[in-house]
Length: 145
Image (cartoon, rainbow, N blue to C red; front, side, top):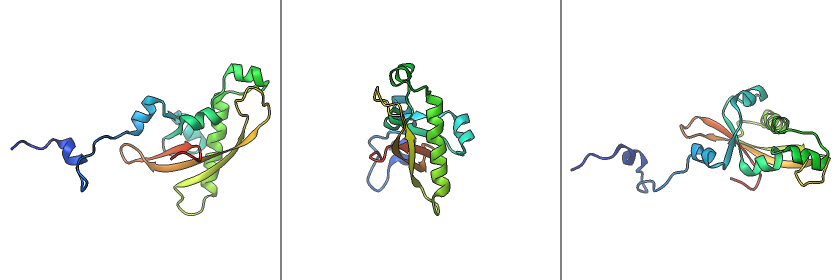
């Protein structure tokens, strides 16, 4: 009789072995999640690692020099990211009880090639377990999970 593979012992449960897992690290490596620099997250008030989904990043953070020229709006990604982080921290502060998910409302200039004034955007910020079960925060569009 062979010794059980340690990974099999960990991945087996009442429903049998896990066939496939997709970790947060995998999502970051694939570009599905965009990690927030640790120093910026801490400065904004987060105590845990933060990442945005690529859709939330594209909608509320991404900004190029070409966007600024086309829309005559001088912005940069760091400033737009700061706005998202600040509003997410404020949403958690306003939440009652031990909320694991909050709605984040912010105003941002959409990247549509013509708009030069801010419009509302809704995101949600969720606290959950990371790959090592430590808390992590994911900021996403309301239609994402």
